Amino acid sequence: MKSIEIIMLPVKDQQKAKEFYLKLGFKIIVEAPGEHGDMWIQMGLPDGGATISLASFQGIICETEDIAKEIQELKAKGIEVKKIDTTPWGQFAWLKDLDGNELCLHQKS
Image (cartoon, rainbow, N blue to C red; front, side, top):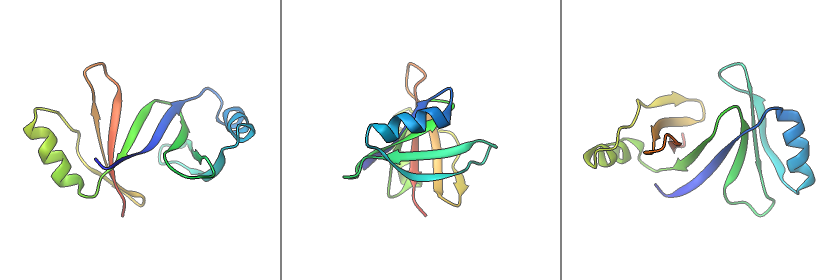
């Protein structure tokens, strides 16, 4: 894993949460329909770095340059990783830590 790319924050009302983060100085990076009928709202601070997504569940998305190699290395360490999902935004593979927190590997297209 090379960096934390997106921290997914569970919110009850995406539009109200978006307004709050805009007041804090965040900027909208992406606001588009998601794959499951919801909206994908991704925001970040003006100077860049990791971003947030206002979502219905929590998770941390970590960028990787070679998702297949990363999964192979994690499985060799006894870490279970779900199958790779290919989307227009790249490849994603989810895993959970010992407390059920979700992490996701992301290789950009």
